[in-house]
Length: 179
Image (cartoon, rainbow, N blue to C red; front, side):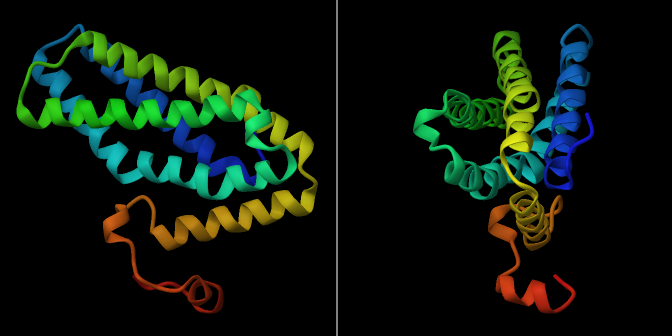
């Protein structure tokens, strides 16, 4: 689906994650070495992109939506936040299991994959279209600017939160970034 520039990066992240989920699903039926390599890729992607993706939604997208519709009165936004907690927890558990070299349970991988697919569907089919209908163009333009600055500030997809450059947001508005 073609979205407003404010949502294009988030939708791209969703497509990347779906592709990784499919690779894991296929690898579940292959050699264990291939599965571990795909999970290593998935965990790397999560650390480099997924954590920021959720952070961006919670720090940039949800406050603008909350201004129009309080999160407490919107079941889709509540579900989005619940999913974020579940996804973080599932990736944390997968990371611990993987790093310890313990056997990877297919049930856990299926749960994570289904949770991610359901969450992505929620956002792409329900949350994003509703956002595009409810927000006037000036708010969407503001969202696009905030999202772009967030990604630039975080230097996505190359940095984790503990590696973020320590620059003021104003510096990004007035001069080109040089991490």
